[in-house]
Length: 406
Image 1 (cartoon, rainbow, N blue to C red):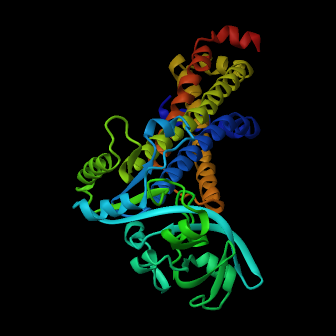
Image 2: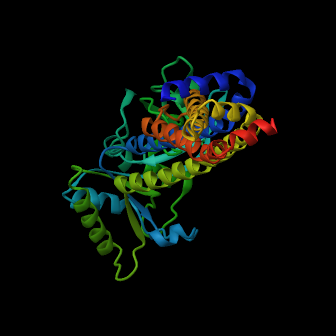
Image 3: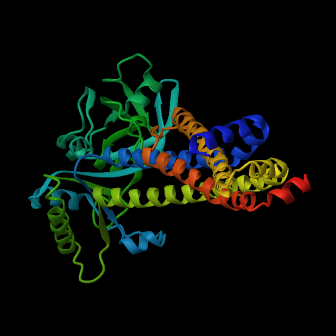
């Protein structure tokens, strides 16, 4: 008997027992759908995090108070030595730097007439737009004179502008921030949140005004900042900029051993994010692949039952000339058909799940071709592997004994 005849017979046999065949494939369908969906979700999460990091701005470095080890251990006693003067020194003394912005944030109530909302209040400097790649939709941004004069002026995000002013133009309007009156001088272009920071729903004021009027002076070394964001002149200059900034701050802080700051580059954050999301994707795929193994065992169990039920058929076929190889190939083909068909159906369900999750979450939809090929290939291999035992058992049946037992 050739392969085409064996395939035809296997297809007829499986079609004659549709319910049992469908239930047998169920484990493979669930396994494949889980693997495809988990890999797709993992890759979508990776793209989402990478996009969030890219939105921070081009060639960005972040200087954060406290050393890396202390922050990783969750030390809450962060030194208050990183100040506005450090940001100004970096801007004027580091040649590989294009722009510098200092930031410090607090929460507070913003009022306009009878409307009020709790939002983030960020004190910053004029370099913010260049470093963080923002644009002004209306009016202007904070400038050096605003900072030096501690002016009561503010720039608000587009979301906050819509909530407070509806269709009115916010420019020139007076709002109260923590009970102090500020004039709106600009509105930022909508950009979306990035790593939990949503500047669209925040108000930005000069960092000197924030310190002198809202939060008070908290460091004996000057105007304390939460972090300093820095844009290098080019991607190639980032390592040079990091080296120069480190040496400058060590000199300014008179450090001889143990930095009281650390510098985090955008590339380092990307590497960390890719490592974490890659490991998470691999773990999810590994957990989901257990379903494939369980589905393979289900195929073997059903095929063993099928051998027992079809003992008379096997004996009759052997009696009229079918060889053990013909019997073996038929049962193997049945197992492979079940697993491969289950793999294809599972792939369709998995892809559908990915697009459904993408529709209700910020993750980007994407079906990994390599994951589909691997999952379908593995499911077919599992059917072949687990189909060997029942197929060999069928092939070894003695035709006389088989006919007699029937």
